[in-house]
Length: 139
Ligand SMILES: [Zn+2]
Ligand SMILES: [Zn+2]
Image (cartoon, rainbow, N blue to C red; front, side, top):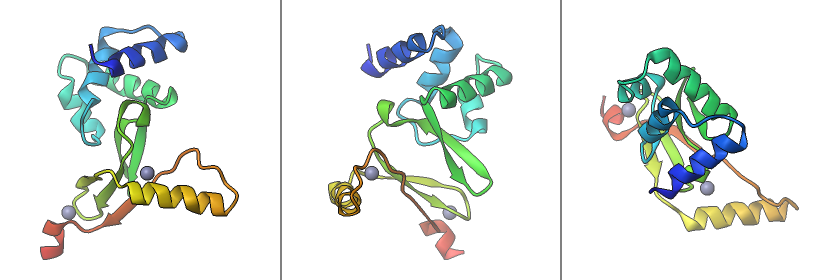
């Protein structure tokens, strides 16, 4: 079985939360996906009622299983780094398309060095590039 599913179950148990079929389904719907809007997430979980998907998403956020990516006044959800390779995003402010930036070791090293230069030991960071995607640049 996927190690990330084991990790997910362990995280729930650790928080005294039971592993329900609905929680597992929502988690699996997010696995290896680009950040999803709640609308998209609900659509990917057809077997689960809308209210449960919302409740489950809120629980995941509380437990650090998923996190929000704010796009203007809206947001998308994705799994946290524990379940997902560390990465960054670029978001189009016009059409909300989200593009994942593939791993960039130079960038990561530079951030660690920048923190160290300011006597900081980096624990985490979030970087988001906002702009206009190729399509929106044309119009
Ligand atoms: Zn766009
Ligand atoms: Zn990074």
